[in-house]
Amino acid sequence: MSKIRKAVIILFVSVLLVFVISFSMYSIDSLRIRKNTNPLFTFYTANLNDGGSKIYYGLFYQIIKWKPIDGQEKIETHYIINFKDPL
Picture (cartoon, rainbow, N blue to C red):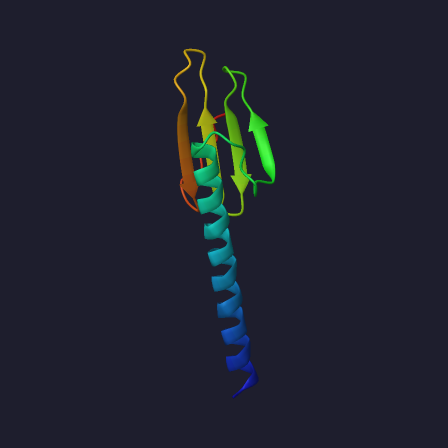
C-alpha cells in the first residue's frame, strides 16, 4: 500500500470520527436541553437580554433556547448548516 493511499485512508477515518463524535455530542445536548437541563458539551454560551434566552455552541452545532418575556419557551437546534446570529 502506498504512502498516499494510507494518508487518504487516515484522513477519511479521522474526518468520519470527528463527525460521529460531533453528532453524538449534539444528540446528547439536544436531549438534555429538551429535558430542561444544561448541555454538557457546549464550549460557549451567549445570554440575551430578552427574558433569559441562551445560545449554546458545540462542535458543529448550535442550540438556542428562546425564553422571551411572555414566557413561551422555544428550542431551536442547528447542526452544521443554518447557524443563526440572533444578536
